[in-house]
Length: 202
Figure 1 (spheres, rainbow, N blue to C red):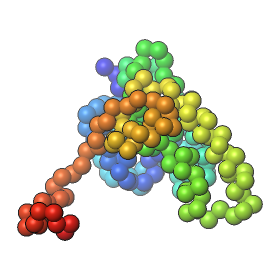
Figure 2: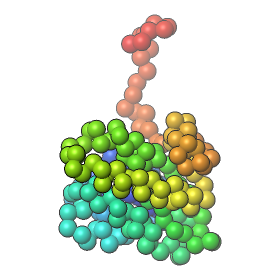
Figure 3: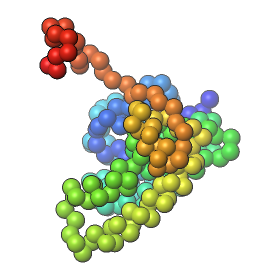
């Protein structure tokens, strides 16, 4: 079976990238399709992957200031060609679920969350240093991207959510049913507090 993985961007390490690493363990021969790729920001193991980037990776400043290029992500992911694959898994918190796959290719979206800065725009803008002059056009752009996001969310054949909270968001914003499969957690980082008494909050 020919498998491809899709990820929003590879210019920093975080929880989404750790999930992607687990997918690579499951499908070691699968290439990773992404919008931008900064090898210097990735651990050595990830620099040995086969990574296919979009046209955005060749634009000045995208790797460092990737959020300033929001309108380009839908175009970037829609231009990838997946005609040679039987299964595509998108590891989504941004735009990568918007890929277009041919009829014979199964697309599974593993949804970390519906795109936060689209569906929680007011909270997102409150944290960002955006002046009043730019807020109106930015709101218009985010509204247009929300419409695209809803349409794109109808493209995956199956949705998987990482939690019941995300499952509720997927149902509310995308009108899609999803199955909950919790993400991998390194349980060796935690230890049970056997000395705590029943009902204790410590």
